Image 1 (cartoon, rainbow, N blue to C red):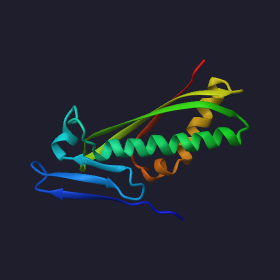
Image 2 (image 1 turned 180 degrees about the horizontal axis):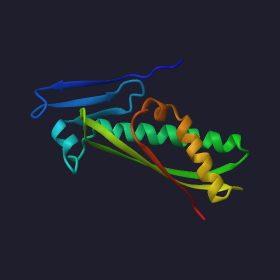
Image 3 (image 1 turned 135 degrees about the vertical axis):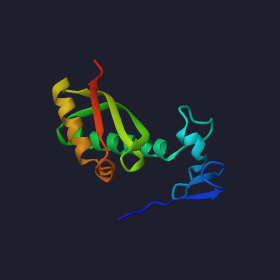
Amino acid sequence: MPSRNASVSWEGGIEDGKGRTSLDSSGVGAFDVSFPSRSADTPQENQTDPEELIGAAHATCFTQNLSGVLNEAGLTVQTLQTRAQVTFGKNDTGLAITGIALSVNGRVDGVDQDRFAELAHEAERTCPVSKALAGTEITLDATLDG
């Protein structure tokens, strides 16, 4: 099975430190990171954080999986637009990802809203990233574009 690699180079402490996260396998690029940006209500420009990267991974995996689930059901996907909102906060064990809200809007031939939502929930349940995030509350809003 394939594996992918990412790495981080970090200098300094948690509050005054900074780093660069690199997507090594794809060579897509490297991104600045810092804890103050991560914990701020508005992140610093041109910086990312683990929650944004998890959101990107989750939205991508879920969307690919949903496309497959819809195809397996004999449906034709025109477009799927997915957003993942990952919330960083505290719980009883300390800092944590406290929830992920997925929302998907689709244009799919031959399906009604109820069936689309049912298949979207199946895709979320069987998504490899959703399974990796077991224990995190994940919500899903699935709507068809009329």
